[in-house]
Length: 608
Ligand code: M6R
Image 1 (cartoon, rainbow, N blue to C red):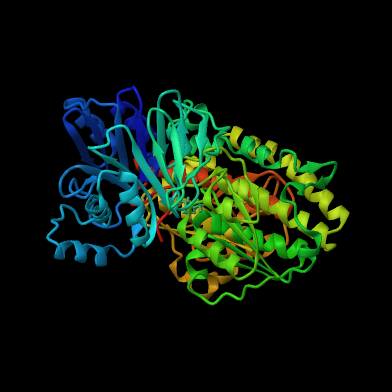
Image 2 (tube, protein in one colour):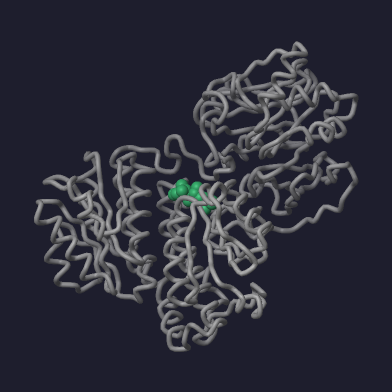
């Protein structure tokens, strides 16, 4: 949801900003813009659409200067247009600002400014902040910003530049991500670490409400009341290579192929001689034994991983477990107390609804554990403990490696907690540990064999309007996630359903050209799902069947057969999703879609 970058140093700022925006374009791609400060004051360039349009603009009319801010937008307030693109200027043109997030009380603030005669150039919520800060400005941008911030409601990461203070860029965050990059005689700000990696791996993650200043001399952090605070500099493990496509046509395909390594990373150091080792979470056994319920909160793909997580938690911990869409949790009346374990799941660790839901859970006295990919992210920081999935940067908007690593993390968590609670036997644990150890190799084997049925199916059905995905129990969420993958990158309508529900309505859709993807690996519900397949075939429907290698009955029923290796049924969602990711990918590429940046979406949803 919008990417922001800022630079102060000796290089051409526009080049540094464009490099940063390239790495952040996954956050939004409705428009982009930069503002550079030089001897002639603040200069702006903006362009609607992809970053390439801004690059062309800057190539045609370059901007020179060593201080600047840049933005890539996912539109919230106001249509994608040049006038609504960031940066925005204050009424006197002296201050420029970029913003990721939403200022919820902007109407009230706008009315106040309008009454004072301020003219607005855009429809955005951001512009009010530019005018408010400039009105408060009396020669010190830091003071003016600190004075205005208490008046803003909502979520934001802001960066500002003032013509009268050419040596510094200020930034602040509340509920939106922000990272500072520390260099030699140059310093940076960004929404996410990959934007900095070409220049530095030394980073600072400011806390909510803090105000940051970057100048050539260094990085300074202030409390909201402007007390100077120590800057905790750390060195990120991320590398630039990890943020590149490495020869793959799309990030999504690269990330699908990274899954064996990503899962191995999730498991690294957490499987110990047939047992699961969760000591890093420092869980208090008394607290765990006092738990009565589990609530899992997430959005999108992470929510589907949570649905598998629910089944795992119930099987191994015997604790009643519910799964919540974070955006629903916040506005329902969830029964959460000190005996509830709230597990939040988020690749980015920044999803606004999930973050707010965790805050609510904490306020209700729950124990909070997060399953996150991004180190130091907001959700990880506010949770009592975090199980990092260690999938590496996921750039493609469609989540792939984050999902399978979340599934692996849930297997660790559920069995590990089950052992602590005495509800999982040593044999059960050993069976899952053994299964997990084989999973990276099995995913690799799946990716290494050219799954012909997937490509054939993508070619044959790319032009249909609807797809159905069905599964049961552990693979009901696989159906949901498979359908989400297809719709988000190919724009074909797809629905994920519990197989047993077909005859309660959706079966009416089935006819000769209607494809159903049925997920029926070995396990407790395989037979039942094959019965559902029979019902579809009896109505001339087309069935693409995901089944365990060597399942002759499934092979007979399938119009297209996709085989996955045999594994523990609890782990089968990790294998079953892989061909469905590829099906979505090949369908979308056949249709010429922008796979890594599907329309209307952004990678990190930091607005509610
Ligand atoms: O970063 P998060 O895991 O919290 O993100 C949640 C969803 O926005 C995300 O999974 C989204 O649904 C993906 N585009 C799905 O591929």
